[in-house]
Length: 94
Image 1 (cartoon, rainbow, N blue to C red):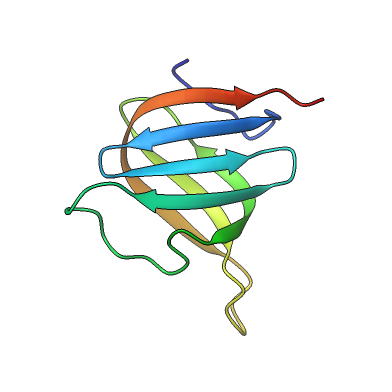
Image 2 (image 1 turned 135 degrees about the vertical axis):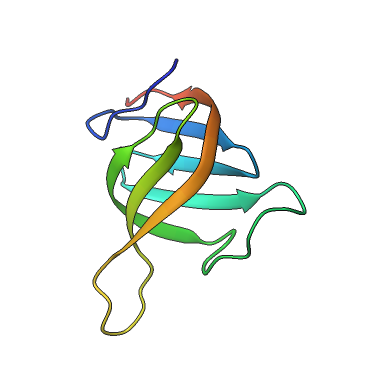
């Protein structure tokens, strides 16, 4: 698979150059797992965040997400990753 759309459902694993993102598009949640020493330390690493929108998720390009981090007085933030190298379906909606 080369592209993941915001309208998809089910669970997905998106591997970037430095991290893995586990995205549950049915429940609109995600988790970032840093996988290399070059990975930046980000707020809520390894903790669940609310996924508001996937703006772009395509192999060979940075993934762009709109997420909610439960930070007071901040409704949402964008997260731009390093280039996506692999998109894998983990489960279908049942």
